[in-house]
Image (spheres, rainbow, N blue to C red):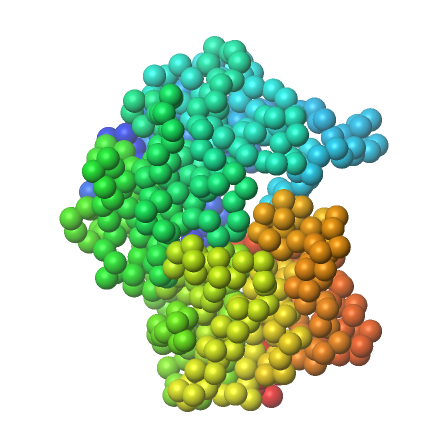
Length: 609
């Protein structure tokens, strides 16, 4: 596999199941004549012809009678008969539609306001009074999003308003209320705690429908109208507190449905939050949470990594990877058997390439996934560091690992302390001491691979994104063992990052990194800043950066670049326009290819000679 092969990549992203369970609507990202498209497919769940319903779409959802599929195109809502036919444009909101839910034969729509509480004098100035004025992946948050009920005649009834943002709209089972997630408090930016709220579909005041301590990220309704939501267990959660499923019944304390697992649950989009994905030791299986317990829907022996779930009519479908596959396919799940393959997407693309050698090791209590060429060691190594830190490598390799392995490198993917697949204690062992236990674990893993004869100690590089970029920057400033490094959207200065990051002012305090209003806080932020060690860096460093990244913005990479260039060290800074924090996944195709080519060329130059 080469970077140019990304032009033929296929990726399933979203799905929905028809009410009778006979069809699945799924979005597949695919390149056609050099341009990316997100086509809408309709797949029978019992065999039959796959139909391309629309060449471009997102957020597909079946109507209550199953005869029609709704979807978004160019940020407006459209419908089309499920078995083919002409499309109908439903909305013409000035700033488009963000999300929606079927309401009988019409819709509940989430749309940005045309006017903005931030803009002053049209385009003359932007007046900022809140901490949440920007969000990675969305840019500046200038226009609050609110709910509207569409009538069959096309008129709209506005249900919510104010200087706050609603999300995740759903219709209650009784059909009289709209549920959504929001934090409508005036000073919510200082202490955000979004919860589930409801509003009558005929209009009226909003009311609270969830009472969990932590911020809600997603929710769905049980048939009796009670709310099942995904939330952390405490009011100001650290990065390592396991998100759980909670059942909210009016008049009773919320009940955790998954807290006893000591794992992050609710980690994939789903049409029913009782159908959940739990992250466990490199696997991300689908589970069904009921009053009787938790049933596994994907056998552990298949090494499942489930990306999205949908269910209706007694049928559960998933976008999932099995057996360490690097790209997912569409499956129908069964509680008492193996998943049934409904549509090959990622596996069809990957079948054209020689598979790499994949291994799973345990070194010093650290889980390590290896992806490499079918060649005996010792090999040149790229230590690939995940983001987060509360994240973890799954058994499924990403495309960077495949590309580096195809180029002759042994890709080492460790789940070091701070990773979230092994429970709260393992993640919290990192805490706010970035650069200490995590760096120690990296060296333990590399030492173990060298001792096993798998890694060439003279040819070791490291690469990471986000927190992985931080750790890359840290490792090369505190160790001389790395011959090359690539840091993508990485943190370099925690002090300035406190304000430059869209989450920094809240995240840094809650996760124990520090603050900027006490000497102790500033001291700790600087203590865990890679820029502090820049004078010791001699490793050639390639900095890759999304220009529109609001999570780890360009100012971080620029400080590292300027310092290293001023010291006349080997450094290169590559800035990608119109690209956010998810540069490797969501940037324009030619930019994704370019970054992969540059990364591989950098390691070839400095590790292979």
